[in-house]
Image (cartoon, rainbow, N blue to C red; front, side, top):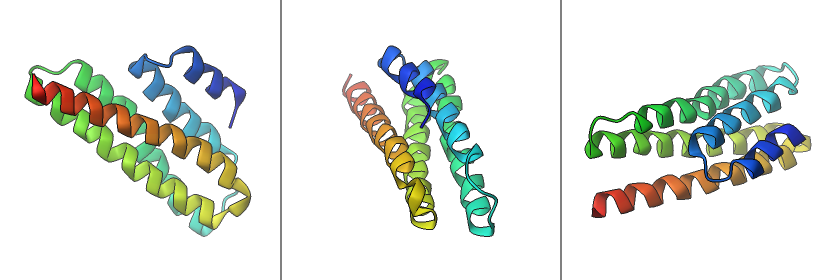
Length: 126
């Protein structure tokens, strides 16, 4: 994982717009270093779609028109980030030498999952 990506995460720890964008950028940087192989290419398409859509869905949540819409968009973020964790696990299985990079991205995805879940729960209580 690039130091650039890690620095962005540390610097913007609580700015979810920046954090979700940096996560998508980290996914892109990671997959660009993977070899072109039949299985890897299929997994890369999936992880790029789910990993980069988190930021786009967060942007939609930030512009939500109601509390219900906000929670729905955040639920989409949570769904996509959980899917991303799955694809990272599959990439780690297909390319064991990349498991450390997958683990770092997976850990960030897990943190984002928890953040989205907490926001959804606390917003629904209001």
